[in-house]
Image 1: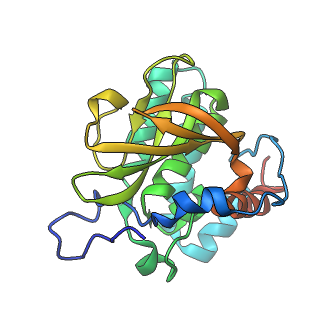
Image 2 (image 1 turned 180 degrees about the vertical axis):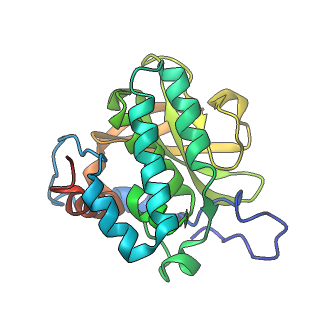
Image 3 (image 1 turned 90 degrees about the vertical axis):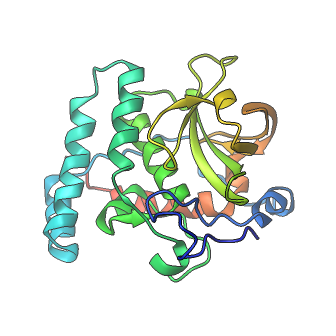
Length: 240
């Protein structure tokens, strides 16, 4: 398992890498192939006003405001270019707090839905990446152009997760990261060593920041399956 950043490590809560254990790499190959497939249906993250009001009553006015701001972002960037969508979504979520899973959820590794991330105003690297991924899908960025990438953050000697965007299938991907505010090509991020990546469909081994070899579907990742199930439960009947 990757060593966690210590509270007194000198790295701010906003920038520390997440808590993904290195054991996940082995889990890819060991995970049972009989895991139920959830399919490739588009899981919307549009929320109704009634649902936002309900969450506001449960989690407070600031949580309600964050959800409203998120939904307004989704509406406002629908017609923007993909480059603008990437920048605005990256900037929006990078405002949230970085919090280790063990402190935030009392679990070693928990992949939060975007709603959970926003109502609690915090999460670690996988939560930033997942929220950006689902938001960009909602505003029209094709799933085929994005992957959530499991990497090693060299400076911290820790496992980490980022979102990658491919303008074309053969392009050098852009990296959306909570460690830095800038979106940079993967070959300009020597501080990250790519291990594997996945999206709603597939699971790839990575090489020099690129998808190198498909080794199965993303349903082989247990945390991803559980996340998608919770997301389905949270958003069902919530769209106006």
